[in-house]
Amino acid sequence: MNHDGLVAEMRTLREQVAGVTDAAVVAVDGLLIAADTEDGIDPDALAALAAAGLGLARRTTATCGRGTFQQSVTHGTAGCAAMYAVGDTALMVVLGDEGLNLGRLEAESLKAVERIKGVLSLPGASRADR
Image (tube, rainbow, N blue to C red; front, top):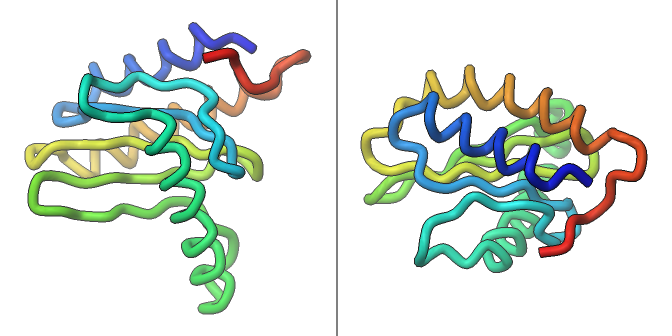
């Protein structure tokens, strides 16, 4: 697993999109693969919550006849959390503050997801040691 490559992708996203504060790549079962998070964010808890949210998002998308889950955004008073499907086996979770431009985040995140898919599909890729 190219753990450094995954962290580099998340850092690049943070640099390209003002307002991105944290990011993680998570297996759909809730285990953390890699994280670029600030103090105060527990990456393992973030991974578990993302997996729980994925279950609901997938079911909602399917029940409403909207195809396969691709992304979701949850807004709060201090920012937002966005989840992006990385194939069928992983998610990228991005946290942002109040100044986050969601249009820019979506454009750059979709590019990052494709690059992360490539890293995760390399031979020998598995969950990274934390």
